[in-house]
Length: 455
Image (cartoon, rainbow, N blue to C red; front, side):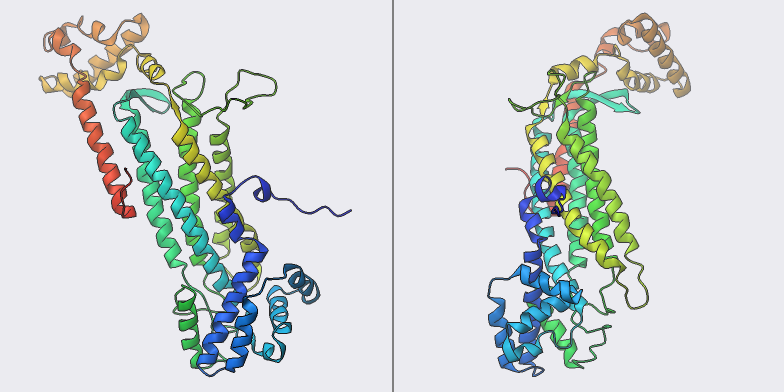
């Protein structure tokens, strides 16, 4: 007994609105719309009878029989030929004018462009929604003190709102790049077998321009039998970059949720199970899913880069790649976006643990403040750096507070009063500067998307 093939995006991953665009029904519906639009323009320019265009237009309004098209493809071993035969059979004598002067990729590339524009619109909407969530959480946490880490080691005092701001800045730039790449891909092709308008002649240029405009697309300067695949690759690479940014966000949350850190947690539903064996487990499974999907998407981008290189005016090696890659790329990216939006929106922030972690080094994270103050008061930087480094090492050995130990050094106490030492970290001034950074990021991101991100 033959089992129907199943792919995780059929039941597990992806925004349904995106996945619907890559169904066979939607594909054939779009291809028929291309054939209909071209026929209407050709009839207006006197290339085919008006009655033929009318018959094709009337047929395009009917429900599509996907199974019939698939039966015809089983006979012809050619998808577009099967579709053309299906339309022709249902248009009577006028059916012979279907696909007049066209080649398969006139229909495939043009319908691909239409579907990708629709899918891209949904992706941009998800991105805009994510940016609003990030802006909101950045503002909510503009005074949430935590510790910054570089190389995984405590660095200096930080503000948790800045993490959301960094992510917002990265996502907003990715929004701009994907929007630009989608516009670069807004090309169809109606120029015949190898792009020379051989059958339609000079009128073909006008047919292409008008038909593509009606379909919401642009006329390319030139095409062979297909559109150049750098257009596809550029978009998919930008999507892979966005996917990597989402992976970065997810990885940070995964790290901060580790038991030893415990500064944030994914929201855990009442009936949710973390482990079948260990009931106490609360795992960052959504972020782990985002990171796993990113690995797949990075690989898919390589496949699209390979598709740029085709033989002569075309070969068919890109076709199988695109059948696999396009639904997966948009389906998986939409899954990442939906997941990250929910994670960020519901993220539980443990401010008490952040303060506990901040104090783990007994004040050593303020070393740069002391270094700078010594330099300002006349000590050579090299000497100051060596001295503060020695104080820091002593803190590690003695488990004494950094400032308590620092005031015991004559070289320091002779330059800085004890009261001034205590006041080196001016939290108020620090938070005012951070808030300006956050507001600047939101402002720059709003300029990119052309609308407010804050209610």
